[in-house]
Length: 111
Image (cartoon, rainbow, N blue to C red; front, top):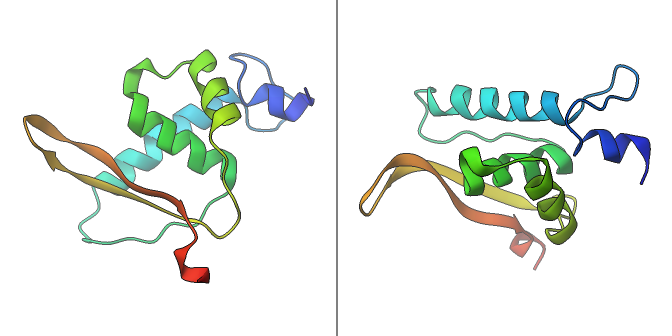
């Protein structure tokens, strides 16, 4: 496994000054909090594949997300460039308000 890829799924492991597992989870949590607290009804956010997959993993797994589950998520969930992923912060039946995955890596805009 390449060192950079390893740093994104291994707690405490860091390649020079690059972002690592600990950094990307902190950034994902901050991003979700920041977006949740915005007044706008709709926002467009552009990002790269590792961060999008980390955001989605955090939304789906919440506090159960750890390095093993993130590695499994990265290994089993593919993402292509220019795909559209939609997350909603809203209430759901019998659940408190939270993030919901609406669509993942949609490419219908190419059809």
